[in-house]
Image (cartoon, rainbow over all chains, first blue to last red; front, side):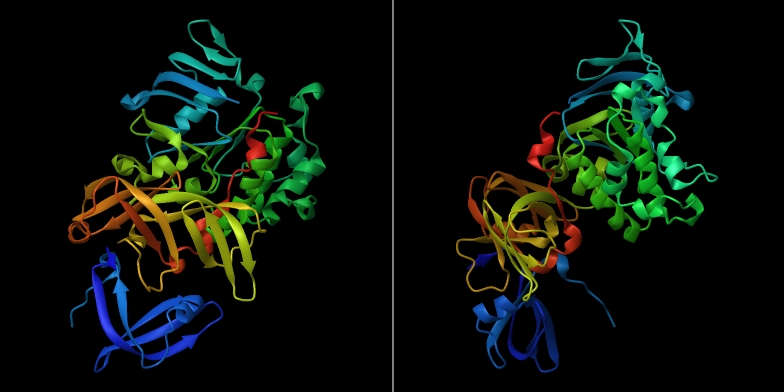
Length: 69
Length: 373
């Protein structure tokens, strides 16, 4: 797969919270580093996502913000 | 209906307008920033200002022609005018306000009844009230009704929503869509708000400083990078149309059929088979070469690259033809190189369902309504 989104962060799914139409998928990239994705329930099923499965968070560069401590 | 305008007008303080366009759209939007000359142009069409030179006509009816010595007075042009402020008579009921302009039109030229207009605008329950007891959105609907009941041949709307908050705008926009689709009445709609125009216009006239910069269908104008300084858009967007293929209310999902692919979005309250238009911001579109693989993004449109432009801040806008419509993706230069994107290449556009919320959607002008009366 070649995709224009520049950021692909590999991790392991630690939690999936299913809502009416969308699920919140929490992906642990490393100890204490978690990103959350809001995706459709359909996508969760099609990709066979569940806790413990390895997946990638794909983020367009225009959607990344930077903060400093 | 075709509105043709070719006029010049010099105003005080050095402002000069020189505008030429024709539109056969049901709703023609005059769009530009403050000081572009939108209201001047509307006043020239209405007959409230006299051009220095030129011609204005609705089909064969000439409203103004300097060379031929024609200048139909405002009162005989039968043009309805809705302003930013409602201008209702405070001492009169809604009903009396609505009927105020009725007698100014000869009986044989009148169309539309009070009942019909009241029903169209959903103001039946307000008839006995005074304007002071109405909300901003209700007042504006009554003002539109008053303009309609004078049986105009053209309706001018000058920033009719500008003084309303977002919620009131959302309330009134569906009525303007109905007006556009159900009445055989051409509308010229002035606005500086691109979201409003993306929703309701079929033709856009972009005004720069006193001149016409571009005229064209809404999707084409919004996607054009060179018009960005005039439209004031921080970024490109596209307007696509699709048919509602299925509704799954339990899952809260609407499925749309587009010639370039199937789209799944959060529930949009319209019937199956209805045609909707929706706006997609360029930044919400990613591109994939070949099969995108297993990825959670549901909406995949097959397209062909038609142009690649550099934009500021450093990035690239990739323009695509998707099933005959124009889509724009804003991506990084880095990505353009990594995917080796070139004009003519087939790609898949990926749009997250979450990027298409219910405010992205509007009723598409119905095809029947486009036919002349």
